[in-house]
Amino acid sequence: MMNLNTPYYIVYEDKLRHNLDIITDVANRAGVKIIMAFKANALWKTFPIFREYGISSTASSVNEMRLANDELHCKAHTYCPAYTPDTMRAFLQGSSHITFNSVAQYERFKAAVDASPCHISCGLRVNPMCSVIDTDIYNPSCPGSRFGVTADQLDYMPEGIEGLHFHALCESSSHDLEKVLVAVERQFGKFMPQLKWINMGGGHLMTRKGYDTDHLVGVLKAFKQRHPNLEVILEPGSAFCWQTGDLESTVVDIVENSGIKTAIVDVSFADHMPDCLEMPYKPAITQALSEVDHSKPTYRIGGNSCLSGDYVGDWSFEHPLEIGQQLTFEDMNHYTTVKTTMFNGLQHPDLVLQHSDGTREILRHFDYEDYKNRMD
Image (cartoon, rainbow, N blue to C red; front, top):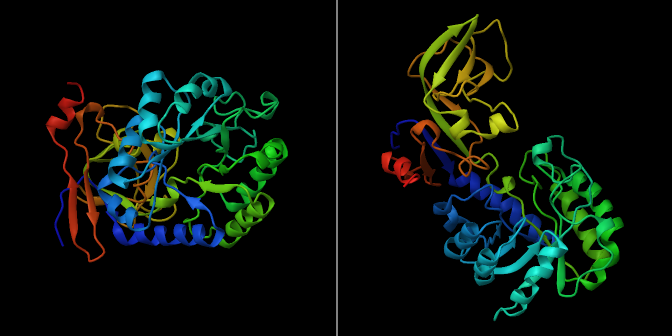
């Protein structure tokens, strides 16, 4: 097996296929379409695997749409909080569906859509204001949300709108979806007989261990029975790449201050694992104990940047850490590789794919020119 120098992200083809098998099974059994959200995964050199399963995608920017066209070989289901004349011209070229965040946005661009030589199905994002998410930064249904039209703002469905889109989940269960659907149907059900499709957004973490996929299939089938005229679309992000990749790092120093030992690694939470600070959450480290045990060697883990808050802790280990020891941060594919930065000019981790036969391929190595050219 290829020896690799840290830092690097490694994605496992077998684990990707495991998730794709689950997702396509749900789609087939429920009779729905499940597409991938690039906001969670844009590692396009793995897209040939996704194409084998017939996966298409969403897009929330022109760049994401172009990636769908170029690398998944599909037109995108596009949603953007606000379009401009320039972006709309681009979206019209590469989208099959365009969802508008407000009635005003739809009315502003309706003529452009109507003039398009290819039919584009227009949708309206609605907000059922049904919150099942604890962390506000990821909650599109929190009070004051900028996402979607609320029921009290929608007296009629504008002419030409063919679908509804809502997004109210984040790493959620099928029971959460069931709760949200009650609110959606109560508030917007009167419009559904005149529509062609409904997009239930993302956050359906159907590949997480313990997720009740049978219940999800039942919920979706029951909805389709109530609304047989609607094509049902789901667009999860995390589910496709959940627990499919890790971030490999090395301990480069150990320091102590006020009784706290910090192991500094050759990666950065701020640069390479930003959700750990934004959400925040504490990732699993393969070499650490599952629970903190202060009777064992215990460390804060610090990133190798100049940001004071670039650390997370604590972790306990069976034996004291040593400089040069490798640490594996687990589940660092979805919503990670897409959000990295080059703050402080730190070495960006390589992108590595481990194929099903065990061979490893470096998909991308980053160097000084990548850092420099971002500011060119």
